Length: 314
Ligand code: GH3
Ligand code: MG
Ligand code: MG
Ligand code: MG
Ligand code: MG
Image 1 (cartoon, rainbow, N blue to C red):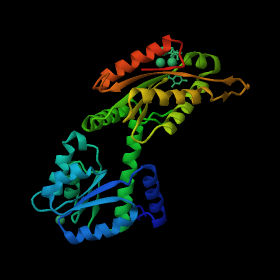
Image 2: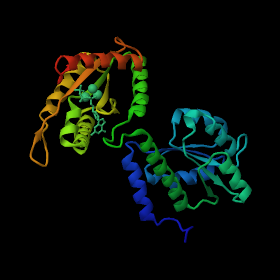
Image 3: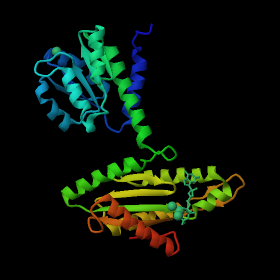
Image 4: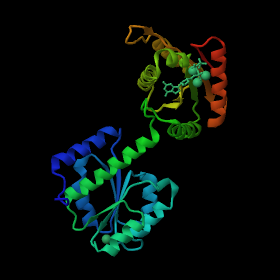
């Protein structure tokens, strides 16, 4: 019974979950030298909400990889020019692609072949002739696992926002795009005011609740192109694409009003109000890289604290 594929409704559930959790459909690149096989795979996979690209000539593999940027690779074992094993090894030696899940399709399932497949760095394989439900189960399992691991590595557990590593990565991309299109970006550091006394007076759990709510408000207040992250402790980063410093100050000031009027009713009916201070730096005028922008925003934040807290400075 271990080899029995998942019944269709269950596969559908897993698939739908993966699709809903990621904003965009997962991208799958399939490389197989047999055009008929490719057509069959396309037909099989097209109802599953994936973005598919198929390739019959492994010589254009690298180009497809770089332009399509797949979330998962399906590689045929036997192909002319380059075998699946060779492609797999090349992918695994490239830092950018080391983590992409790879699924093999193979007509040979003897232990030596299977061993070579895993030695090359593959995550899983499906034997030919392909069983549709099995391929779909293995493919969505792999996407789901990868997504889970990625979330663990990139998201802050308390707020669900991007952690510092993921924020830095996203910010670098926003800056790169802005440079190419000659557009401004605003980089803001936000720090909750007098947060330590909240922990000390009402307990750490209340502090956590405040951080959680603040994270929620931030997530709801910015656009998909913006970066919102927890930089550490009670410090948050907001990077606004296509926004100059005066507009960023305006947006953050509105947010401050909203946050200030948020009332936390605690168990003993104490009503708690919290403010934040923020510092804004503008790309590229105040700095053209992340460390410089961070330093400049932090200086502005320090001035906002000195001036009495609960304000936004640039
Ligand atoms: P200021 O207005 O100058 O920013 O004062 P502050 O009290 O907010 O600043 P300080 O840096 O002294 O204190 C930050 C506190 O944030 C100390 C730390 O225990 C608390 N903190 C950091 N991370 C967490 C967390 O995940 N949960 C809770 N509950 N507290 C946290
Ligand atoms: Mg083949
Ligand atoms: Mg702080
Ligand atoms: Mg402090
Ligand atoms: Mg603080």
